[in-house]
Length: 293
Image (cartoon, rainbow, N blue to C red):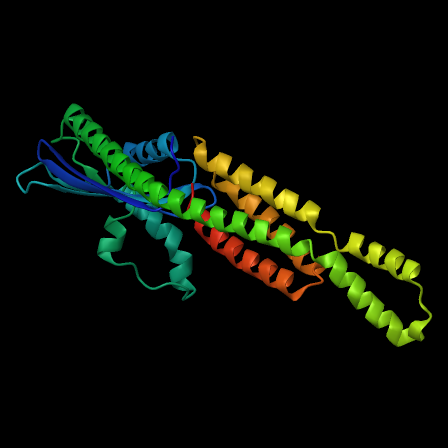
């Protein structure tokens, strides 16, 4: 599966017998896979079908699936399940008595699960089963459309992320070239500082030794090597199949770790500026990665 985003929308419509309906499925960014469903009463299998459809296609994202259904006016009526309604009312009575909730509205009560039922004396169970099966097919159709939109988003993200990786690679090369100037700069700075403290008594040998120690501490080659390694790993993930968002998010943290260390070890203003530019690009990369499944 190519790179996929996490934002999408899908819609499908259908009809069976006296029933007609529309399905809308939406998704946004999410660390895990979460599905929220809202559908017509009397079709309890729809929520399970929506969850299974999402789990079969996706690994991450927050999904909202809604089914709006209506029935022809001359169709079989529905009845109110008074037993279920009484249980809801009894459960809410303590909250009403304590003033923690207001009186429920009629439309709110009728929307509760199980309150409205198809009249068993009029409706054919097999016909209702066919309607539910057709609704489930529409749910899958809407999910397929949503998946296609997420794939299109992934194609756009791929170009953006590779462009940011190009910038990270360029800044890494620039940092590597600039870092080569650090030993001489450190020696010159140490010589000047030592002369201020002890005058001309400091020997060249001592200056070289102390400057060498400082240069070793300021060596950023390991950080730049790891930065290049992380960049190569990120490109490999972008070229692979499957959901790679979590792995890219982890690599982003490693990118930032190397950039922070680079800045802390810098003894040159130019190298510090490269490190700051690098952090800015990595932050842009992190923001885009949040959209990757």
